[in-house]
Length: 307
Ligand code: GYE
Image 1: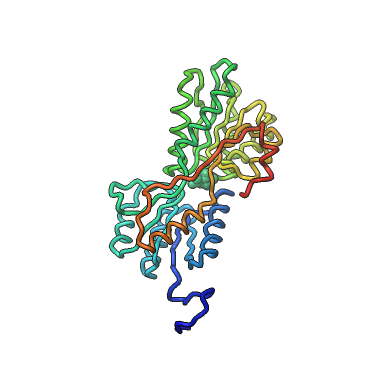
Image 2: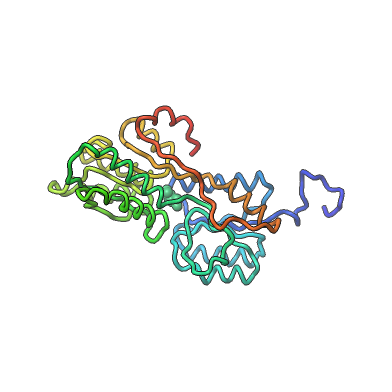
């Protein structure tokens, strides 16, 4: 109702904050956990969330954002599939006077006033952590050592930055060579397919796999087992995210190291939305804190995983 005496626990519908969220897809367990976290946090904060899944299409993200603008939502949140090409659509939102929060992956725009804050992980640092683990693990192993890299979605920030951070770190040793690298779209299916192609040449056998996410590592493990190669032993496996399934493989000794990337960004996003609505200025960058887990502590940690 419209009366002033309405129940405080049930806010007037016209007073509820409306957020339009353009999610990039549902490719991985990370993404599923991310979506759930944002939906739950919105519900708890009493925010009405218009949710749209773009299924890996930037064009679909543009369509979703245009429909949020037509609906005159209070805030738009975007998890961008790739980092280029965002300037025009962000200008449309700005012209409509709707603040935009970028979350998870970054946008590559010249004008920083096109969004209020970018909330998510430091992917370059994740790549560095993966590289540091490898240098440590191989410190008594002479080269040359062939590394295989399963990359994520082409043009996406996590894939670009994880790749850079990893390379910048392992170049400390010239005898570590990335002998295979190809995108596998952050999915189990592609991870399996691409890994099996990396195992075909008996003269160029990979000793290390760096997978840009857990799902691709899980697919790669299947490919290795089908090829008679022991994951975690014949091939050192490092992946990123820290999903429950990856931890279970780490307990079995089939993954050696997982660099954590936290998908549970819902509370950070809803807090940011509330602050924007109160007219406060947000930090341009909000980074989620993350750890590294290795085989040694996997058994202890597996029960604590929330995604
Ligand atoms: O690592 C991967 C997902 O953008 C951080 O996307 C995210 C990545 C995550 O598909 O599993």
